[in-house]
Amino acid sequence: MRIGELAARAGTTTRTLRYYESRGLLPVRRTGNGYRSYDESDLRLLRQIRTLQDFGFDLEETRPFVECLRAGHPEGDSCPASLAVYRRKLGELDSLIGELTTVRDTVARQLARAELAAEAEAPGGPEPQCELGGDTW
Image 1 (tube, rainbow, N blue to C red):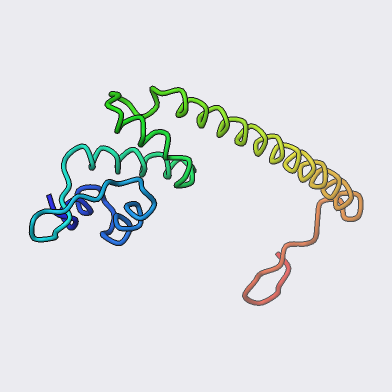
Image 2 (tube, one colour; image 1 turned 30 degrees about the vertical axis):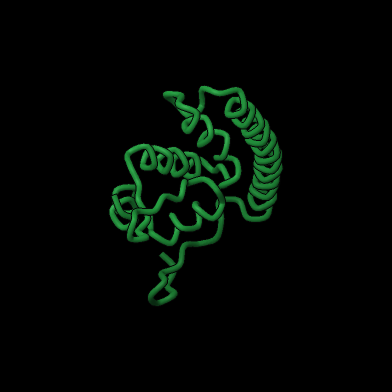
């Protein structure tokens, strides 16, 4: 298949495919008349790359998965290098989750403190106001 068909089937652009080629992730094959030529295995590589990128993997992190598929494995994550990337990514995610949990706990404490202070200053809160006329209800 030609580059436009592959891009359409993969849900991406021809520009993206040429970029993947330049990075060595997608093989460059040409027909006798110079057109790029692709097959179903290339579509499979693209789907692997796109899925991983949707999960937050950067392009270079997809390389072991692509190489695993190119080596003939049924899945891109059945090779040791792919598993190592999964482990590293899980470590990064665990670290980010820890940081976010710390921030969340701090914000929750600040909210609780602010609510107590607001309650102490004005029990029951301010009188409701009509937004249209400013009258008290």
